[in-house]
Amino acid sequence: MQAAESGVLATSRQLPALHSRVPVGKGSKLPQLSAVGAESRKAWYVLAAGLCAKGCGSQWRRRTTLRAVLQQEAPLQTRERRSERGKVLPNHDAFPPPPKVPTTWWQLLHHLLFFGLGLWTVLFEPSWVPDWKLTFFMYLYGDFMSALLHRTFDHEECLKVPALDFVAYGFQMHHAWPMESTRGVGLYRLFCDTVRIQWILLVCFAALSNHTLLAAQILYLKLLFGAYGSAVGHFYAHFPEGTRPFAVRVLQRLHLLLPPQHHAVHHREPYNENLTSVSGLTDFIVNPLLKDCPFLPALLTLLGLSMFDIRLIEGLYTGLF
Ligand SMILES: [Zn+2]
Ligand SMILES: [Zn+2]
Image (cartoon, rainbow, N blue to C red; front, top):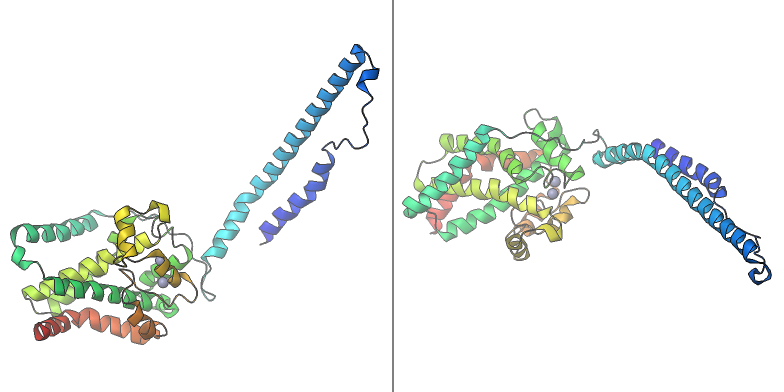
């Protein structure tokens, strides 16, 4: 604030001095022009032109001086505002703006394999494509899981847990820099951010799930909606009205993709409502359950479901359908 205040003081201190240099022309009464000859009229014109030029020159000098003062102070004021903006947690240092992190070839390979497998299945093994009931259930489950993950990593305690701290940092830095950490980094970067967690889920699947077609379908839909769907939903929820593609606007209006107004509720302190990132459809269940959920129960539920949800859903699905 000191820098900003000194800028204001410097500007206001200079204003009277600058103002006094601007001619106001008070009390200068022009004589009747009809009473003087052509010579004296010419002299008056020259005098008037001179006064105008002097006035314009003063105005220009005044503006130039003001601009110089403001330009000197602008970087300081910007730095001050940036550090204030990054301070979203009272007991934690201000978050700096997100850095530009380059993507890697193995992240690209992961995406190509994932979507390549989906396309190959549709084209050559259509009988492996999951039915609409499982797809719709997993779409809702992806929304729910995005909220559980969000609730866990939005807890301040999570910033002190080794191996989870850097993920929590990303989630909580987003509260300070919502646009910069979504639209600013691009959708592909957000896809790449999900690759590590997708690998953890793949390891859980390999170690703990049945290796059946149904289990593989559940896994694929879990990654499709939970990882990629969540990135798309959250990315476009931070886009201004006029810049969203038509299809995205339609899906957001239908609540099939996270609507910006719905997600905006989450960006109010204490950041514990409307935690979903895919569609926001499950927030009416999630808000009462997770809004005030402490860190440890949220973390344990997240770990338990991440490990055993495919088995649970498989059992539920085969029992029900
Ligand atoms: Zn959050
Ligand atoms: Zn957000």
